[in-house]
Image (cartoon, rainbow, N blue to C red; front, top):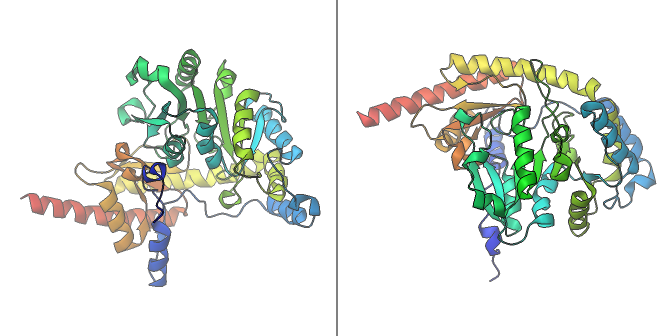
Amino acid sequence: MIGPSERVGRLPGYPLAEIPAIKRRLLDAGVDVIDMGAGDLDAMPPEPVIEALREALGDLRYHKYGFQQGLPEFRKACTAYIEQRFGQRFDPVAEILPLIGSKEGLSHVTLAVCNAGDVVLVPEPGYQAYIGGALLSLAEPRVCGLRADKGFLLDWDAIPSDVLSRTRVAYLNYPNNPTAAVAPMEYLEKSVAICRKHGILLAYDNPYVDLTYDGYVAPSIFEVPGARDVAIEYLSLSKSYSMTGWRIGYAVGNPTLIGALTRVKSYVDTGPFLAIQKAGCVALARSEEFVAPVRAELMRRRDAGVAALRESGLAVETPKASMYLWVALPNGVKSQPFARRAMEETGTIVLPGAAFGPAGEGFFRVALTVGADRLAEGVRRLGGVLTEVTAGAAASSS
């Protein structure tokens, strides 16, 4: 009997794998489900973007293979956005690569630059595509725990020099998923300096760059001098434009690094659907117009969620960016049983911190994917579950 490969067997369980089936069962049973699990906004994409897709669907040219070149117009739209937003200029032909969502580019980059046994630095809690990319490329993942007392920043000083000398790729993601942490510019400068010293590719995952609040403006890694020598930045249209299912993003970097990733992708896909790239041009060209209302709504939800969580006795920081709340559980309460009980008993879906790796234990993630009133109701339900869990734990210990 043919079974999975050893590398597949080493992959950890994916945090969202079982939730859709459980959610469907609950809905079929008439349960009022409040889904604050996946980072999937409850809004339509901008109408001009949808209309651009409609028009492209009627044009035969956009139904052909895009290959890795994709739509030249989309590449130019990416570079125009980057220059307007970050003041950085890139060659649309040699330094941009359209992606079928940034996730696949993040996982494929290790295939482009790693040899078997090379070290890949994987932040934890973190996006599962990072450790997946390391394992599938036969690299050696080095899990780097992100701690609250360190601002959930990857602690470069805790990594031995002999490990850094064997490291080929380091993943960084700020604004961060799931912790919503942001990185000061001096931290990014240190990160680039270390990567340049040790010849490490810095895979900078930046899908939440425009979802920022209270005057905070998230940077591009390329605003750090020297980053072009070592970094690939991943940008996505999924979150800011409510286009998660469209699967469109892009990678930015120097020609050597983008060329290596392009070569890998040439063997595994033929690029994003050209009609979606055409629509993506409209989204990028009118970025601030489309993102501003999304940002404002997320800030309203953030404030409502933070207030409700604190009223329920749960500790949570007010994030400056992203679309998540990273919530600390009381000591002794395990995140996975808590989240499972909340889902099964109250129809409230959140992600347990442990789903993002063992270093995420003691927390759960709330996605700001429902309105303020529904957020408050979901938090009220979570508070009820927590009261029962803690009461039960106290009774069993007495």
